[in-house]
Image (tube, rainbow, N blue to C red; front, side, top):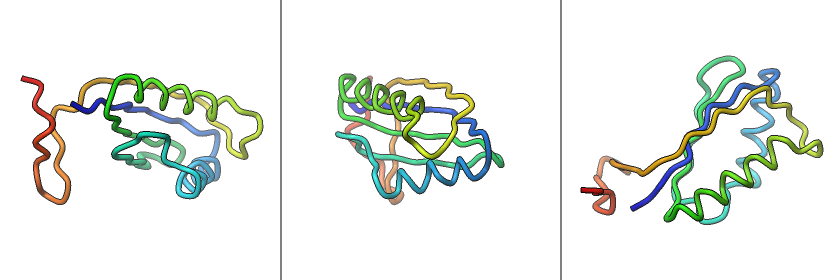
Length: 104
């Protein structure tokens, strides 16, 4: 069963949000990432969802994310990050239910 990082982001400016998205388009996804979504939810806020094949891979993705968010080398400024994680219970891709997500 896959697991996911679900992350709320608040950036300093809308330009910073765009810089993060542009960086991820060119340099993402993180290792072992199965599915990755980045959704703008406000002028300076976004939600990221990344699924992984194992808890170890999910934790590694979180570690990489935290390093990037706090890196002084990156061109964007992140004001706040709220990470959550857990098992993927349902996954539809192109309208088809993935059979690998059945925790019961």
